[in-house]
Length: 115
Image 1 (cartoon, rainbow, N blue to C red):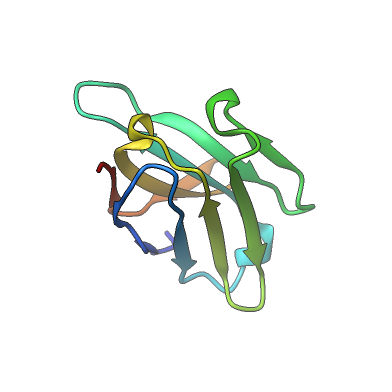
Image 2 (image 1 turned 90 degrees about the vertical axis):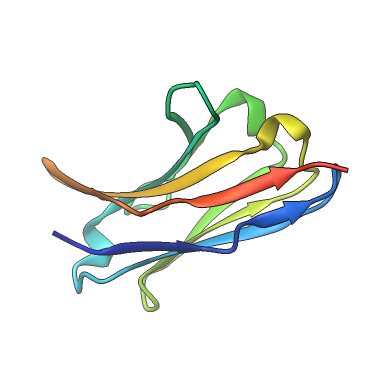
């Protein structure tokens, strides 16, 4: 299984921006569908954004127009650019790497939006 490591979380004020990064250890990274999920306390883990091998992107309605997902296959990295952050974006953000019927999760990174 591929190792998945997220970075870039932190504390930001409402209206601010953060960039999350996810690095995958597999040499077959270009074959993975990559996704970001988030989980707030007491809630389920929900899809935030996804990018396929063909760079087709999907976003949750709540983040459309504010978040942008991208990938760099040469660096085996997927990035989530988060702008105009809101308090309701506060959660642990997880990166998921999927290849056919197999997937791997990262350990998560905390994002807190508060004044």
